[in-house]
Image 1 (cartoon, rainbow, N blue to C red):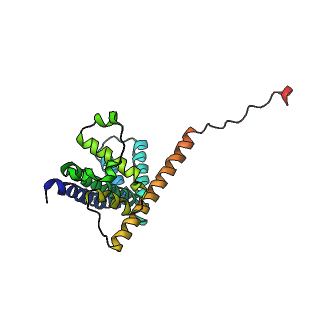
Image 2: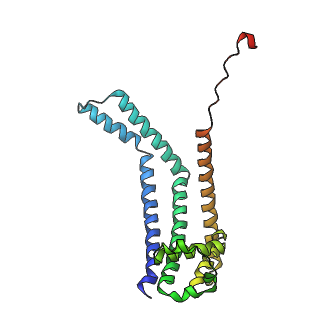
Image 3: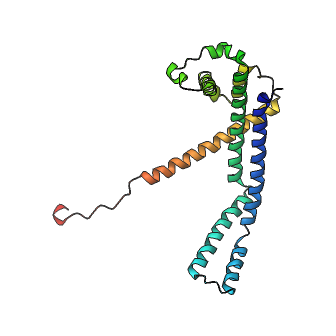
Length: 223
């Protein structure tokens, strides 16, 4: 198989490997932070014994900060690293999306025969916008418009990828276990995205909501 055809797969595989490594290292780091308060206190005590000028207030501030971090880290450990796994879940799904898009673009670029597909021929793109782009950007715009018009981006699980992969004749049968796992992964990713959106909205509302100040007391003649 040509290098251009396998390069997107290699990049996606490497990205998944990096996510796994970051997840592993982060879990180790969080576990260590959960037990770091005695170490911080010991280091500050060493500085005091050595005669290093340490402001008591600053010393206490550092200890308090270490305790807050340790408390958060301990909650992560006790609950199975939910925040960390949420980030990894989103990252893995994004890697899958990008990997498949890159794979389809590589085939469209190196095998122009796929551009003759009726599904792509029906796409309408403004000429002015199209002419301002280089070849790869044109193909990406074409693919994005196809995904939008075919509603592939709204499909569930592996179906959204099968629609796009059919453009390069790579859509095929997938065993039910893999299909189910991809569907579940997408649903979890969607829940995480919705929760983050709602938290952002709540923070925005709190920040933009005008403060309610008590009304000034009415004058005697206005009571």
